[in-house]
Image 1: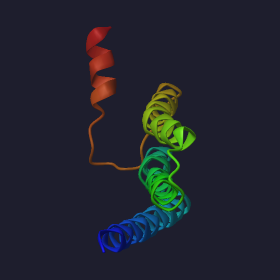
Image 2: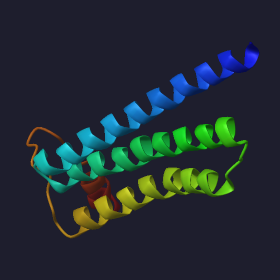
Image 3: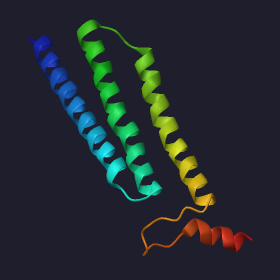
Length: 121
């Protein structure tokens, strides 16, 4: 009896994680197409990889663990790799865009990084 409840909870969590990851990835891909400048597009692309892909990989890990009794180290390393590298790469791309002179399209925001660089000089 307990095995059926655990399997039911595992199946529900797998389904919810897959739906959440698919929704985040779909909405982020729409955001990449629709957003006006590199900074907002970069935000959408980073959220897709960290939230969407990671939740899909977590669902795959839970599926393998519950159904096949496999602890997949490759999935764990993949989740960790995505969680660490996606924000860092987005930060570096955003900084490179800012240093090359690309301005955001929003007009009512201040540029704190540019102000700090001017004070430093």
